[in-house]
Amino acid sequence: MDIISNSPLQTELAGKELASTLKKGDVVALFGGLGMGKTQFIRGLAIGLNIKDAVSSPTFALVHEYRGEIPLYHFDMYRVSTWDDLYSTCFFDYLESGGICAVEWSENIEEALPKNAILVSIERMEDENSRTIKIRKAVQSNEDTCC
Image 1 (cartoon, rainbow, N blue to C red):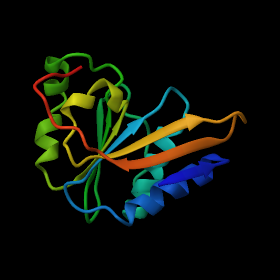
Image 2: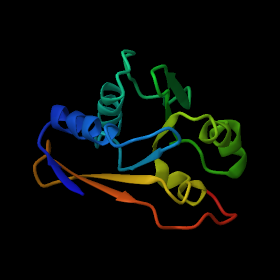
Image 3: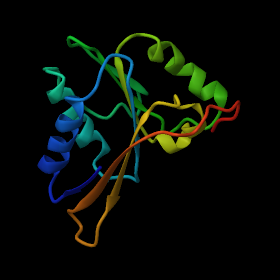
Image 4: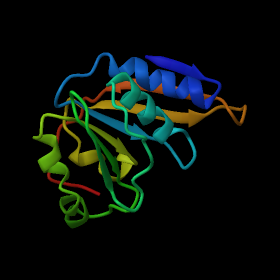
């Protein structure tokens, strides 16, 4: 599915729409550079999951937990570059928790993503405020390589 977003609110609404299709254990892997709207998209996921907590980027915490009927675990993998870094986030424990994991900077851990992850790529269009949001199912297999 491809979505054109012309504002942060439309990016949030795209996340809310995706949330209506998610189930316990799903992983949403976000790809895109700085300022593309990854956190805004995850705010929409949280709204769609009826989570009342304010969503902010977990850049320095690496993971934020948001409580709801289905918990949302929001990861920022910007600083993750090795398997040791990845293990220090407890990422694999969260995958088994029954919540939904939303992962910013997934390009840094692409080889560690579950084979059934939902891939969300956000790219800037010619207009500074417009984005193309591409949502796909992963098809790669997990190899013993990472980062």
